[in-house]
Length: 266
Ligand code: HH2
Image 1 (tube, rainbow, N blue to C red):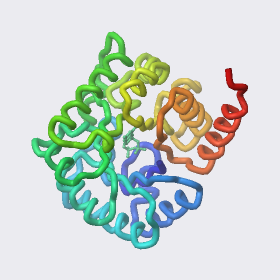
Image 2: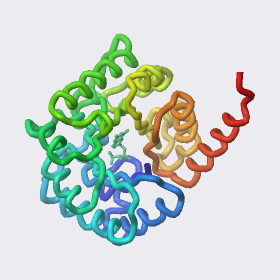
Image 3: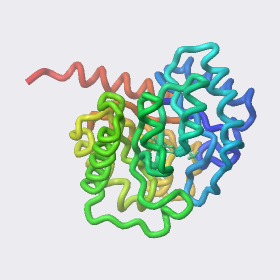
Image 4: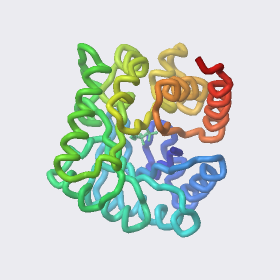
């Protein structure tokens, strides 16, 4: 899944694709590089980010979704917590609702997911984007995240979302201490995979990579760490990785898969 942020303030690529033509060029490049899905976002969820109004978010993402859909049948995901935006995005050609609030943000989130009948990504987040990094706490982060995701999947199914439309995401960096929580969560991904839903992993360019590399490493200089995390995810059985650098990640995953295939069967 290639990331297309149409935002002025994303931590990883803020401002670079904020204008419409640049965002479309970027989307085209990610498709050419081998992305199977695009994740389009119009509101930054980075720690401390200010919320964006619904009209502004729509104006940022809808023309891009329409433009991509006009020339490609690639799966398009809309990264939003707002049901109205998800509805408009599906009408514009999106196929998947990526909700970092796991359908908890609005009272009608679950109902909207049922009504839309689209695939949904339910992501774990402790707290909310503005404050989530203040004091995250877990006793056993992987078990607690798996427990939360299992419960949200059950709530979605009880509301009427079809089981086969549900994806889960551990929410790397969302209300998690850089190394104390993100690392055991990455090491415990199997517990989330074991829930039996496809898992999406978004570790690309996140701050823990800089922390493990001495600190102060710019977001676009974190490719090696991003690939290491993607491969750890693949080894744990995740179904997809949400990444900024599609070409290098596709190459890494293909080489990893080829080596796995060459392993003698026991
Ligand atoms: N991470 C970000 C945004 N959306 N969605 C899912 N499902 N999983 C993630 O890990 C995830 C996500 C943050 O990354 P980015 O889009 O690069 O930055 P920003 O939120 O600042 O736009």
